[in-house]
Image (cartoon, rainbow, N blue to C red; front, side):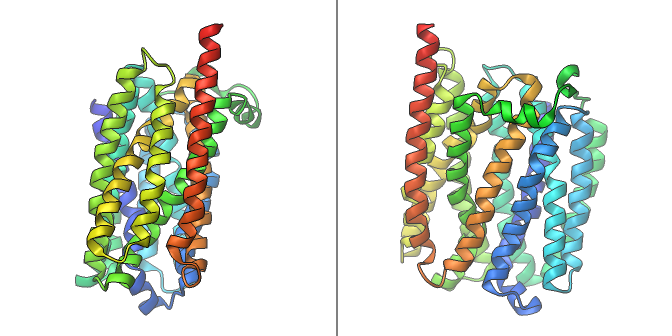
Length: 395
């Protein structure tokens, strides 16, 4: 578990750096004259670039040493974070967000590929789930830290400090991470043909569709929930950043640990368990996501956000572990990269749409349609997994 512990900290820093910006939207409006649509682009630009870079990053993770990719990514995204803190215009800030997307894309396929290669079927969901829980901590810390620094010391200093912490930890990883290489013959073949081959597995294809639906709602939470709390309930940036992340992410961490442990225990008796638990997470979380944004009581909003976090954690724990059940070790990096690209594209679209539509149908109006799509995708995923494994048993 040493590898998981080292990468847990790296992923936490990854999400702190990307998340803290969403708690400083009022400051960006005031100091750099961002509009609501441009604030939507803060999330969308990052997510589009991050998503489109994922297949390439995944392919590289299957070709080269994963430990070196992880260290390089951490150094580069920390420098991009510094660039955001030094930006003096909307275009410059968005350009540095795009640079952060490119550099952060290098991390994830290499990290989850290294963890999956080090853990067998009996512990894979749990190991990947523990690693993913760092994302939840990073969102909480980033949401609070960004707003707190903006209120107390200035958001620019907050970005500069984050850069220094990232570079310092990269030096730690360079010394502590064990060498991790992909399988030698993973470099052979046409990479685009290999990517297309992933979708010949019906379970992987449907998992990708379900992940698109799931991330559509998830990223609205990540990007717009702090601002929603400021505008609806009059909270400060620090308080909204804390409330928008603490309750939902702590409950999500619990869901991740429960979902990972449960899937590992059931995997021997029920081979499709990871797909079923992931589907349950998507279908159950959708109505709670809608209700979080529809409520006009801060207490009720908090309760529904906790329920959303707990149920969405079931999906987060099992997305990549389920994919690795149908993707061989030679495709661990590419398989996770393509999935992350699909989720990132969903997030980019919905973050931007939420900014465009917030003054008309609002967040809750948008999430009605997203929620229906999530429930439909969850049902299709469960049916597809059941059919596939039923055929295997008969065969």
